[in-house]
Length: 449
Image 1: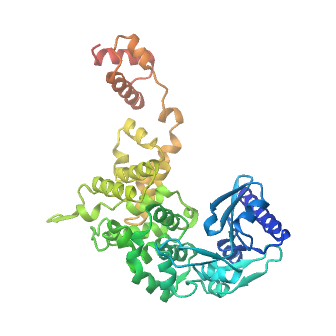
Image 2: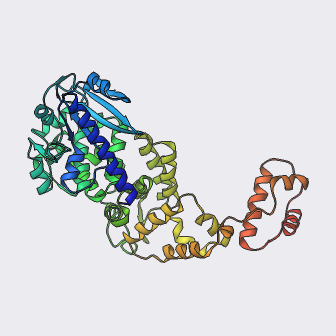
C-alpha cells in the first residue's frame, strides 16, 4: 500500500473513531463492527469502517451535520464526513425473512443480539476503537486464527434469511484465503437453487469482488463444487470436460486452462485487478463448448471467438453490466486470438493493433493465456519490444491532410473523406508517404473527385 493510501486509511479510522466518540458522549453505546474489525485482527488496514450503536436512526441523524437515511427502516444511517460515508447501524434483531433478502421487520435491541443476526463469525466482532478491546460472542477470533468461514448459528437458517450469503461465504473464503466450514458448504449445496432469486445487481457486485480481490481460482472452484456456478453462470460451468489439443494445451481442458489463468491473475501484482481483465479471463474461451468439433486432423474450435462474444454479451446483459464495462470485456474476447499474428502483420496494421484502447489489458490477457497453456511468450515479448521502440508519433502520426484539405481538393463531404483519411494514415505508417505534397499526389492518383 502506498504512503498516500496508508494516510487515507488512517484518516478514515480517525474519522470513524470520532463518530464513535460523538455517539458515546451523547450517552449511547457504539463500536466498530464487521469487516474492519476482522481486518484489524488479521493485521490488515481496513478500507472502510462500519459502526454499530444503541442510538436510534433519528438520534444518530440529530448528532451529525451530514447524514443519509440509507436504510432507516432497518436502522442504518450513513454519516458523511469529507465526502466519505460511514455506515452507522442501530443494534437490532430481525423478524422472519420472507423474500430471502430482507427481514419483514426489525426490533432495536442490544449489541449481543445484533451480533447473532449477522452472517459469519469472522464478521461478528465488536471493537472499542479507543482501547482496541474486542467483544467476541461467536468465537470469531478463533475462526480467524484457524482461517475458517463459518456462519453464525445454523447455516440453513442464515442462508434462508438472505440467499446472497451463500455467494458471500464463497467470496470471503476466496478473498481471505480461508477454508469453508464443511457444514456451511453442505448448506450452500443444499440451498443453492435459491441464489437465482437474488437480483442481478447484487450478484454482479459479489462476483466482481470474488474475481478481483484475490483467490479467484478458489472462488470459482467452490462455486462449481457447490453447484452455484451452474445456477449463476451455466455457460462457464459448461467448460468442464471440454478437451483441447494437447499440442497447444498440455494443461488440460478448457476449464483447467481457465482456472490456471485465474490462479495467475490472483498472484503478485494482479491482486485487485481491473474488473474487465478479470471477466475477460473468465469468459475469453466461453465460446469453446459450443464450437468444438473433431475430425481426422484433430480437435478444432472454429468460430469460438465470435461465439464467445455472443455468449459473454448475454451473460453480462443478464448481470446488468454497464455498457462501457460490457464493451471492454467483449473487446478483450474479440481480440485475444489476434496476438498469434502480430509478427506477420504489416506495419500499419500492427501499429493500429498496438494502439488499441486498453492495450495493456489485452497484452496482459494474452500473457495469462500463454502462461496457462503452451508457455510461449514470443508474441508477448514482440509487442513489448515494439511498444518500447516505436515513438508516440510513429504510433499516432500527425495527419498530412485533413478533411477540409480534401474538400478543398474537390471531394464531396461524406464517407469518402473518412475512407481516404484512413488509407492515407496506413500509407504514412507503412512509410510510403511522408509529406503533404506526397499525400496530395497519392490522393489525386487513387480517387476520382
